[in-house]
Image (cartoon, rainbow over all chains, first blue to last red; front, side, top):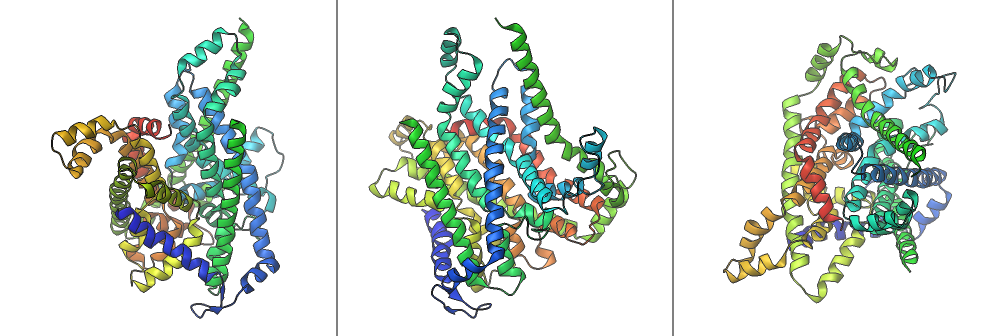
Length: 276
Length: 272
């Protein structure tokens, strides 16, 4: 099994190594065992706390919004009588093929102070004055959330759509004959049948959001004043931007591991409960 | 029947989908128009075609060694994709076909590995590559991506739909396991391969963080890194950046459109 050898070398070994490293302190490659020093540093590090808060905000807002939207689109597109299905499907999936770098830059230019977004919003009188999208901590977060939602909604939609097309048509026919309205068919047939896929996309999206790096690095560089700094970006900064601090960076990375573990576990439990 | 209500929900559905499609496609339009405008016009939100296209292309081509960069990107993404597909499909096939006690345990541990973020692996991988003297090489980029847990998982799920009678019949006919894999399994599973190709190629082509760490000289950089580099200037030339972005997006766009039908089929097979 070559896959297992590769996984062993490039996955298991680094995991154990970084666990060991997370207990070490020092600059650059000059490391020595520091016991719990890194964990103590973690509790006093306000930048870390800000990064953690930001990451959790992104997670709590973006993942539910994106998955609900993906589900809505998939359900609408699953209707075989809908005109222009494949056009809509392709259009909504299209963002997924862009490179993270390319779309990040595009978003940065669209949300410039005099940029197209402000002009459009002003033209339709939603706002009177331009919003300083990237200079204001609140709006910078909104831009990051919009950007990730734009990029990944179609991706999740495809999973839902594929799963919906696997549901036996006759179940819907029977429900329709029994007079079950469309919304009830959605909540009592579609959603329960999709539970494994919903769980899958939730876990994948959670992991993805906790590792958020490319967009924040390219759209906002974590700013203004760390308001969009994420854990991954902080780890990167700790490792390669400031004085390298490998041990401490490894400790921060284990915070992500633990978070992913806890959240995935909760999601599995939630999925199991509903089944019973 | 409640006809007005049905009409209303129908209209709402179309309105929602149209809005979603517009929002999805608009940045692409913006990128194309942007490529023809000067940086200042782009910042000022000019949404009509301009005259700076030729200038932007010239600046882009002159500022980077484009053939070399394109080769790097295609080589890394291409070799990485082929290697990943072979390794992952062999693993997925193996997990499904060979029954043993350890199998589920190994698979379980592997799935746990899916939850380990790349950030946690980044530093050890970097130090490891340094000790192999592989920093700034193609191997350093490709190797860690080859054993993709997600794709192994994906192939295992898809293999569940592979008819075992085919394998049994081939065995009776005297085919060896590797012959079954290459001559029967691979052609039968081509939709799965198509979907996996799109996913893996896009991931490798767009990979940013790991190349950013490992590739250090300009002649080794990928298109993604170059485009990112263009933007990191204090006042980026957005017109040039748009040209770069189009160049970076085109290959994945073409692959997606070529394989689109099989892609959806493949997804269908995998999420059962």
